[in-house]
Image 1: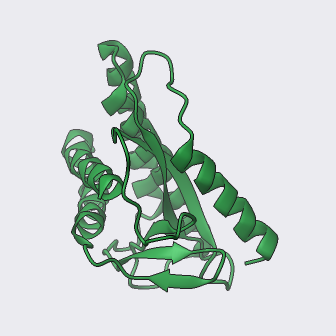
Image 2: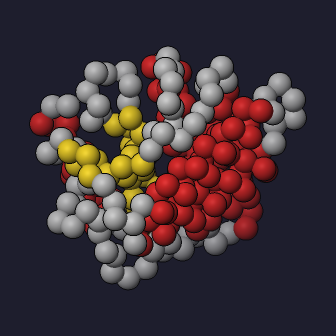
Amino acid sequence: MSLVKRLMIAVTLAVSALVFVPAPAQAGGYWVEICFPDTRTDDPLDLICVPVKVPVEGNRKWWPPDCWVCLPSFDFWKDYVDPAARFEFNERFGKGLGLLAESHLADDEKLAEQLRAEAGGQFLAAAEAVSKYEIAFDGFVWVDPVNGKYLGDPQPDPGVAAGYAMVEGVRILQNTLGKEPDIEGALKEFDAAYEDLSELAAA
């Protein structure tokens, strides 16, 4: 990954982590970046990141210490997945997470329902993009994109729990493709993942 790209990611995270502008008809919170490996390149530090809004109020403790550019990264694949399919999955899945987060924080009930339905559609499209591949949680790490390092977490429980819940949600959708997709069943798993991501941001 080029230095320019790493710095751009760092600036993006700094803005998302430290500056929050409340959206209309929504409760307050913070934006955090949730990332996935981008396998279209040979650089293991290339990531696809999406902003997810979490209801964390007050001062936040940041892990790793003194690494305000570090990004939480989830890998859902133990075996080979076509890079184009994986990219499509990451894009759709990231949009789904963002919409689901907005639905959790929306004060307007109808808006929340609409956002939740749109999230379900994006998650379903993500599952369809990787329909012939078996999803399996393959790890959670913190990535320092500027210094090119992977960092562990002394308390990985929220990240690991979020990873497993997200994988189970996709698996539910994959198993019901071609039938009546169990979007509600999958959304329950994604709801649990969102709660874990909120805990991760607050930890």
